[in-house]
Image (cartoon, rainbow, N blue to C red; front, side, top):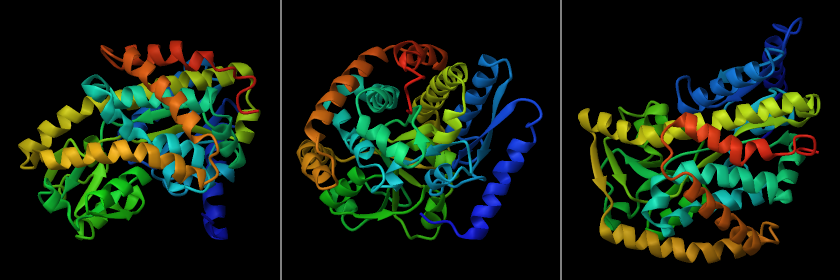
Length: 382
């Protein structure tokens, strides 16, 4: 997107002011997250800041700006222009810039073919699998971020996506013509396959659109119904469809900022990224049951998707895997089949690794030991 001059000056001033507050002492990273205060990504961002400060003895710190410095739609360009040192990038907002990265995110409905064990750890497994793939097996992905003056350093994932609606949307008949806000191309294709109408809009616009009746449902993880304050508008939740998860590029860093860090500071950033990923992703996964219980007590009706919807969803997911290869070849992804095969192996590995994880601390240790500690920080981003 393009910022106007006044907006760029204002945002740049915020970033400079935030840095200037600590310029005489520790270096302070400005960290823009387009989610509201108290949401799971903000909790992860704060864990990042605590970890980096601890790992560097306070010589490098970070300040999280929830939904204020840059919106979700502004974060990628804001990082590119140096308006923040770090930011959470929703790559699906930028289809032209990140085709290789988005293809992997676009294939998340493959989780539906991996059985109940995968469903139980959907986000816990998909986030590290995607992070490992991008940082170790997809030079094209790294090049996409570099072209936007960014370095990818970590991911956070949600549990399976559900239908969060103002009215009952449970059957194929209910879905016919329903207006569904989608957060990724796979959910747009699924919406069309079941006869619904996909609507694309920023996450920051969802609440107003739902309240005004512009949307019938939002395809979203159940915890985000609370994260975005949509509890009063959502009256019906349908579980089981469409599935798939969303993985945010949680701790992307401005490339110039990364290049200005020492190797010790980069390792601290990676340790912080592991903590942030685990804290955010665990909160999403563990929060689903508590949110469902809370909203049910407040009068929201929780449904299970009709068997015909589940059958149609499984049929779609099987066919969509093949369609992805051709679709992304048109977008310049020449290794689509190879990339999907490599990623699927990583996903299966992480589904196994995350079975039986007891809490966020154990998950953070797993992420650090098995992935983030192994990244060559001297070479990464170069």
